[in-house]
Each structure stands twice: as structure tokens, then as C-alpha cells.
Image 1 (cartoon, rainbow, N blue to C red):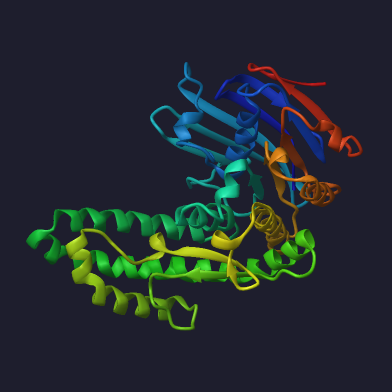
Image 2: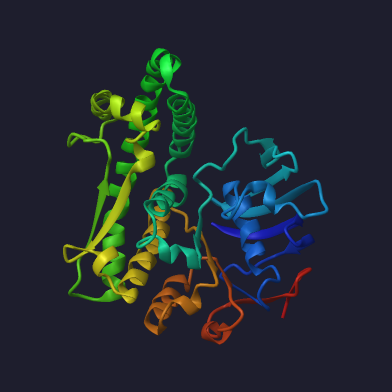
Length: 365
């Protein structure tokens, strides 16, 4: 898979921009705060139907009523046209080859892998960041995942509102939301476990390639629901229901839902020790790079297509050895977009294009 052409209208700081990127490497340089990340965001928005920072409406240029990105992807031996647009009132439309997609995000066949500086916090940051990695980065690979997750989040919001109100009204209506919470929550858990089982061998292998012998990477999903050994959604529903009934009095007291996939965590270990507590900065960077490498390989494993790689100003976050690993990985079939104000000489041996961003447009140099 690769991007043949992108046309951007009223997106962040861009009025109109049309770019035909190189099949392999595209290096985007220029001063900070001039729109390098905005360009990557436009590709992400076209491929996945959402932004990776803030709210979707934030992408609309300040003096415009709507923003749109029209992208032409080469996928499965043919060109697929995607047009994604959002209006100021928040209404979003996604057309694939002119037909309404009918959903708020994109099907998992569009592979976009983003690596940004904030991702280095996945390991040592809050559990929410690790859940976001599963939900947003891995979830696009599983066709039903994000739709199921959105259903769970809607039910969770209604149930939490009811718990906050409390009193007789809560007691009378909570059972209605309990059934849906356990059903959709169990489906989310089942899909998460399936995704993590698929990606773990790939993460482990990538980490070994990056760090060399002597360190073994482990990964464990920490569920707030006491699960049986089965990853079957039906069995997880039974486990969730039993645990939920046992904790319901506590939830009524605390006025919030205290168990479920929205409270879970993912922990990484090196030689049996928690990376959050004992890992060096270099080891943490290696784990995150291994996660991104595994994400790319999983997409290829599931679809037979190489994803598009977006590297947003991460070169300076990696030491020389990890930079070399990254460059070896992207040389060849993977179309890559790299933003950086420095460092283009590192890629001088690769085929590609260099673009300069000046705050209003972008030109090839």
C-alpha cells in the first residue's frame, strides 16, 4: 500500500495543497511550527478517518467552514480514492471511490502507522496511554474492534451518569445498563486478548533484533475483571457479570464503574522485571520501537500489504543504533514520511523526495 497523491483543502494552516509523494521516502523539513506535522495529520485523517491530536473539528482552518482531504491510495493492485471531510458543526463524511462509507472511521484495510515523540510515554506513562495504543493503533487491524469499543463507551457513559445520580432511580435502572456493559465489555476484552496474542511474538522478535541477545521481553494484560483462562467472549461475559454483581455495592458507593476494559492496563517486562520501574531510557525506547515495528508487521501479516509509515520528529529521540535499525526497516517497500528540521543527510542513500514547509505550503527541493 502507498499514497499516490493527496489534495488538502482548509486543513490546519493549509488553504490548498496538492502533493504527489515518492513511492519510498518523503522527507519533510522546515522550521518548527510551520505545518510539518499538519501534513502527516492529513494523511492520517484520510487513511483512518480521524485526527491523532485534539478533536476532529480542530483540523478545520480557522477561517473556514470545513476541511477535506482527498487521497489516492494504491491498494490491492488498484487505486482507491478516499475523500474525508468534516464540517465546523462536527459532521464528518468519508467517501471511498465516491460511495459513502457510512461510518466515522475507516475499515482496517487502510494501514497507517504513526510514530511520534509522545509514543515514548507509552511504557512509563499512565495506563490510558497503553489502552490508547491497543484501541487506536492495534484496533484498526481488527474490523469489529473500534465499533464494539464505541458501543461499550456509550453504555459506560450512560451507566456512570446513572451512578452519579444515585438514589432509587439508579437502583431501578442500573440492571438495564449492566447487561449491555457486560456484553460489550466482554467483546472488547475478547478482541483485545486476540490482538495482543497476535502481536506479542512480533514485538518479542523485534525487540530482540533491536537490543541483541540477553534480554527477553514479556508482556502481560492486567484485567480488572477476574477472567477464566478462556478468551471466548461468552465466557468473559459470565466472568464480567459475576465480578460486576460482586462489586455493584462498591460502585454505587463510589458512583462510577470500577471494573472493565476502560480501567485495564498492559505491562512490559525485561527478564521478568517491570520496564516501568527498572528499564533504562534506552530500553524503553527499544520497547516502543519494537511495538511500532510489530504493528507494521502485523498489518502486513493480516493483509499482505505494507502499511504507510509516518515518523513525526522522532529521529532525535533515538540514538544512532536505533536510527540505523529504523532506516534498515524502511528501506525498500515501505512508503515513509519523515518530519524533522535536521538530519536529512542520514537518508541520502535512499530513493525519495525532500519537501520544504514554509507555513503556507510545501514545495519539493
